[in-house]
Image (cartoon, rainbow, N blue to C red; front, side, top):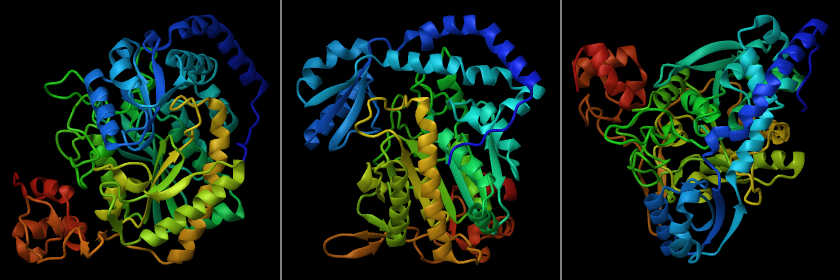
Length: 520
């Protein structure tokens, strides 16, 4: 579906043209050294890893020389690694000459310069106009928005202007910025969709916004979804990090939030390794300088905490977390490659429906499967939490364009926004149809889920146990407590019924202080 166009008055067009002309000279000059030239001479290599020893070697080189794993983790198969120019002499012999590889990007700076030059003439001009109401209301149209990667302010302005949109606040970031969400539809089934929890993955916010535009462009099909669901679209789940990747003196390839780390000069925690499900276990890092750093404690990042709380309070039946890149449509679990979720069969079927519809648009082939067996092990991620802790059955993590054959990695050309958007809309159409066929028209209440661990000899349960109602104290997480267990438990459950009906999670523990005045 091509983005719609709306007319702009001649006066506004003239004003916009004048603005662009005045800014063009300064913009062309600023583009010459995007991000202060910090990626000059950096190269990206694609390694063909065939053994665990090679995985260990890549991990060692990444840690020792601060290489950038574009594949998010070393594993068997194809792995993309950005090697800074300063590290090239240090890794040539121990790494480049040891593992088969090909250089897919000769100079990363060339890519970001090209991207920055495009944005200088498009999104950065539009962003500079935010606040000039007469221009913004006319200029922020679908055709304008999807011509480039936009700032959160521009995306929010556009989303707020869509028919039926209701803006809500999901929470605030470490730096105090609002995390805006936009609701569409009036149905009883709640569905939360976010993008941009990893700052550098710019195609994700663009695609999530594309979904919102599709929903708001009413057809008989989308109206059916709007009557059945209330969607919350969160265009950028990590506003601080996203803004830093867009700043001319920032870091285009930064992934985490902007929270300082005590005792380290490295900034940021990965919010998608900070959720309270198998937090700090394999599939994340204890190194504050690592892109997958899990933080000092579960939910130490305001961004992860805000999303978890919002999804929980919504009683959502669906949650999708959009990322890039790899072209994958996935579902829990990420923390274990042997622990299959109870709803594995229908989540796989739903994912297969989505990727089949997506492929029919442009021929792009997405793989479908559980996270750990499809991409890599990941602990403390959002979809493991929403499924296992909050009982959100339809929990998915999607890796968008590009592909293993695409040499652009995270710096995906803006010309791919519309093709990617058309693909993801087709996938959402198929997915929502499947979900409606599976759930009917009744409202579903979220409860915690069981996860089955399968081995060659036996099947055991590894999720939240169903033991006695008072198996743990109010200051530790575990099974749902009952009001009779403790006077404070009774107060917390009265304020938050989830704690007495599903599980006593970290939110319930934090409510001990706010509700009972006790410190755990």
